[in-house]
Length: 232
Image (cartoon, rainbow, N blue to C red):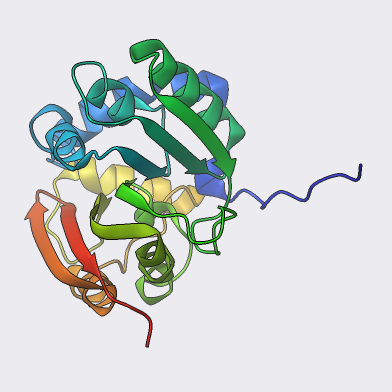
């Protein structure tokens, strides 16, 4: 059998080596979310993830698997989770973490680029889809990033929900810590979000979903979308 061509990683995805993933929860979910981005993991982001979680869930850009692992630790409707990421390291950690938290959930992992059609079974849909802290890592102008919504719409079941968070660019005021992190991450290519704005992402969401709710918390855009629009 020939080798399978896997999508190339970008600077944002390749950053997460096994060593750095051990620091991710502390640096990103605890310190950065509380003091730079001002959008609490415990008070905002995890509750959003848990409230959306359906029987069949799709998680795009998995990080360490913190959100799904903690969401399913207690009683949950979820029976199956599919994880999609460019980095096998993040996928392996997330799979093991979810499996340790809840042994009765089927967990699948897929190496893929969220800006391209996902290599999932034709017509596969999910009761819930999450895209946490991915958009600000995708290279290019925000208009290009809206392709993610164009593609994910087709995987949201009727009555399903898409939820997500992303760190916005210069249009939002920032403290010295946030500006320092933003500068470093953008220079290294981990982020590409100086021009990311609520208005552009809202256009992308409303183009694809009939019901959209957006909140700006600190520097973070927190969004929920329902009623995926049929292709015309």
